[in-house]
Image 1 (cartoon, helix red, strand yellow):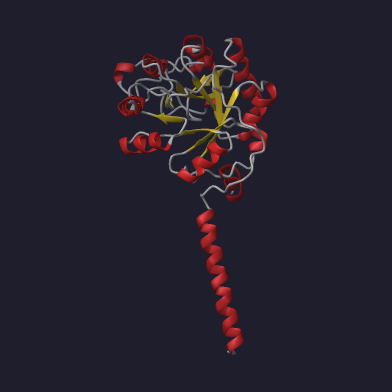
Image 2 (cartoon, rainbow, N blue to C red):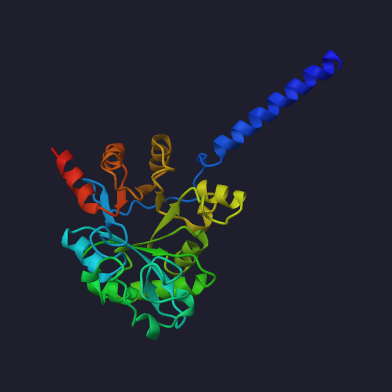
Length: 300
């Protein structure tokens, strides 16, 4: 082999190695980009004196997730809470995290294939503790009626093929209860948020972001979502990264672009202290009492 060929092969190997290393480094790390819009500051939702402490699926460490009991426990502390919504087969917006019923209820099958007349008979509390037996699957209307205006509610829209229908139903419920300026609507799906934006632009929007390691998305779809390349569609006011994705540099950059930043799901005391010190605008936690205690200890 000639010296020229050998040098060329070595150079090619080095280039391929560098390309592979760069690809690995970029696989999950967010890239800086230009915002396609101007996020709103949302002073009506955020406290200038400290971060929002948001109970994930209600106070889900103390009561069964996404139930009225979990929301009551969060509201009793004066804390906002997050919930998840789906359309059921008969068109009602119901509060449940999973696409299927088995994990947190006594039912079986898909939520979107089950009518509300069936869902209303299921037990959504006994799986957590027998003391909560009989706790029902709530509708979004019921939650907004009970807690709307008392605390901020973050309504996460779960992705669906019925995007326009879900967005329209959620916006209709928010309007019905007079809460357009008092809720946050969030989703991993920028197209769902885009529907919300077009129906009712005044509602605050939050773009959830994660590594999507367990999703069935293609690599380029994951990259587009992680790098907020679809922000022109959702035009969020709040970026909501998973704690294992957010970095200090990215946090500073996002806040410099005018975004509010809420990190999830933060339960460990060391992680709570880390993000409080970093200056995020909100922390979403299964243990909001810990976050509240940690924030209180930091107060002068």
